[in-house]
Length: 488
Image 1 (cartoon, rainbow, N blue to C red):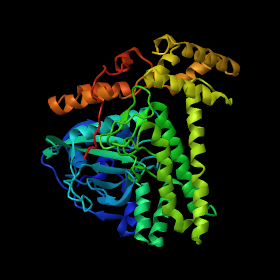
Image 2: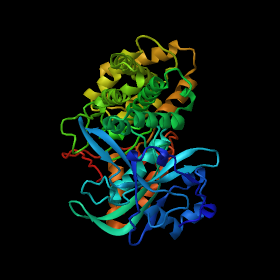
Image 3: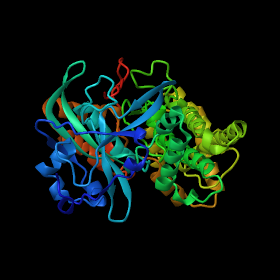
Image 4: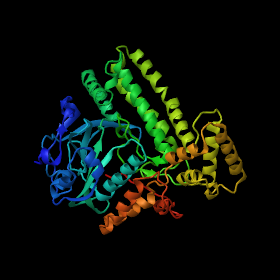
């Protein structure tokens, strides 16, 4: 057992104080020879850990589940989830919550091992994970953090020294994930499905105390809980749309109550702008396409509201009415966040009625001309409209003139608008082909330098440096569509 004092572990286990149906305490599944592959030093420092000690063999043993920190009570969480619209009872089938790290400034963060072995919820699976998907989550989650998007984060990835069998034999790995919590919409669906109002209330009260303590004394705190979760999801998904991020599998068990992005499975970033863009190999109908993400967010929130009905009001009819009223707010709330974000991407500070058509016209042109989403806004930010594929068209020239006139009508200076655009338009994103290049080097050659270089560039996406130029280029044209896969 790792000593807390030396390494900085300061664990609490508040989740174990919920009714026992919400989790199962488990014994870790050791691996043969853990090796630390990547370690997030800034995150470790902010969590209060001793960086040097956690980078040692002892640290690797903890990140592999071979050694458990003092004060930990390992468990697997139970939850449900609508997976592509179909409700299933689920749980942590390959993850183990070590506990909650209390940081030097009093923060509380879940520390979870992903790929740590079988649990009672594994449903026939081996509970393990391959190196590629764990490194993908490490890269994308840290890129999302740098982009300013709420997200779970990656503290470390270790290889296990063991192979796992999927379609082929692959190197095994475990990711240490840090989250505000792992409470999901699916956690509430699980509680509601059990039919115990007392357990549902216990979960809701726990959630409020952990994430929304400022609503504890509200007249109807459960209605306030619904309002807060709706607000956070509207903000989160709008931020996804700003950078062309496609989650890929927006099941209700992949939507956090805290408003963090979670579970980076078949995720990817859009190159050419097209709302119908889908990368996930399992999303054959396009349910979770880029343009559908806002609507799916609302659908998931409706399922959350349904779960809360017994707490919203004693009378079923009144509870439904309260829930419907709040869910009806979501579309306008999302749109407000989206318009604010899109205005910022164009350097616009104030509001005018014609702004939405100005934005829609640009996106329509981008789609028709197969313009790269990120690079189009990068070119506009740099004052290089001629670098866009639309520049030779008459419609773009007219649009550009209207945009300049719009900027001239606001009181803010051109310099202020330019800075707003720089702050709102990343010069670099984790391009899919760059991520694949890094994963291939790591998996096939054991070369992690490609990933390290990519991570360094992605750490400052708004810097617009010369070093980023090579990472701004879209992939070469291909007859084969890019596909992502769930990392199971």
